[in-house]
Image (cartoon, rainbow over all chains, first blue to last red; front, side):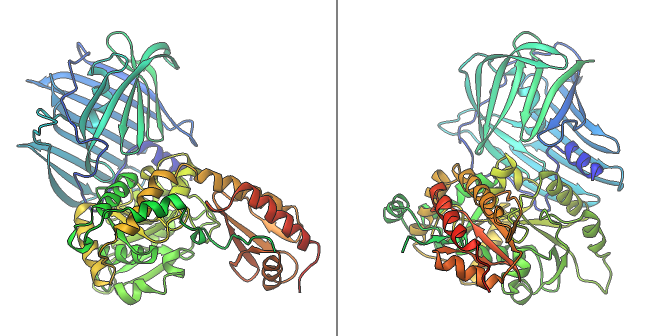
Length: 252
Length: 345
């Protein structure tokens, strides 16, 4: 049972849709490019403790940033796991805009020798979702938002970049932005979300006490919260995403 | 005679005046043509609530599950499901008869889940002799397991296992909003890793009729065809869908009150040594009869104006819902106390 629970803890957004999906109803149809500028000046690596309501120790997660790892692109990595289970996500994004190029999410169940890989490829106004479920491959393609009167320059960001996106938006109390959120885990979807910056709070985590902006991401009928350090380099201090809590443990 | 306190099911709840007004004022069209704006809005809201891409409105929970099974499978397939689940016990064997699938029941754990090892063992290796296993069905909350809210960790483990072996997962979430309230998460989180989910509007949400099937848009397109084949295509259904919209907007946040009332009811019943009562997790109270007969107790309750249903040879079920207040529970306990001293034959 403990193994099973550990598996769950490490699969924060785990996966496995036998059917792949895409665009849908959304919290908002408005969409814009809300990422302003990267707050990271060089390579980064931060470690987080994970917990959930019924599981105080749900493992560790390392967030790594490799700016310009190839010309014009940055590589971001979310490496979460407690052996023999891994839930790792990596994304290649535009170094300046965070626009996604490709994301790969790999879930490994080392105990049962199973690997599920979810890939999102962005090109020509479309995203192609591929799920490789222990060798069984399914694909689906969806259109990304096109310019409209309300959203003349729509912006979309991959689920894997959420903890980086929050660091690069306009961090000012009362800021509200809208973008299109692309998810390729569980069941792939494209959904409009609203982002709000609430007043700063003092947040205490294992790495210390920080003054942090509280960024609220409203998706469907729920909210994610990301506390972003008030000062440069605007690290994520804490995050509450679905039932998982991230707390900054150390800056490596 | 005091007013009847009807605890047989949350399906006995009646639409409120405000819900009836919404129904009367609904804008309608022909939904089979996709022209009913109120149905379309309900389906969009349902998909959003369930965290899925699309949804289709159907007349009942039984049809929702049948359509889901039918859409996930081919005749001759075998589906895995719990031996206490609603699909296996209370849907008139529609899955084998109408979807043409073989049902393979696995022992439900007391908390409503399934043992992953049992699921693993049950999945057949493909060969010329065996049926395909394209689908695992889960239920949350789990009715026959006393309204148990299956923990997310168990749900996640089962969906991961199923997907890793190439099975899709359908969640019978007839009472998914009760599960979400009990687990402290959204319904979308409960259903997150399930490929499809169905939920009922006519239970804790207080609608007169209706369920939704939610999932990927390709799946829902096929489900819509299967709905039509089963006679579930409705025309000016916006009148009914308006009740669903009202319920999604007004009747979800209050569900915890039903859980609190169920806890109060269980506590009060448990004070009588003739009943053995398990602490409810949601809005379903299950009481085992220690002395006397079930029929006798149900009759005695009825004489006092308290309605419950049989839930096994010596077990009764009582369900709280939005037409039952805390005062009603206190009143019901008072009436039950008058009969509990005497053991019915």
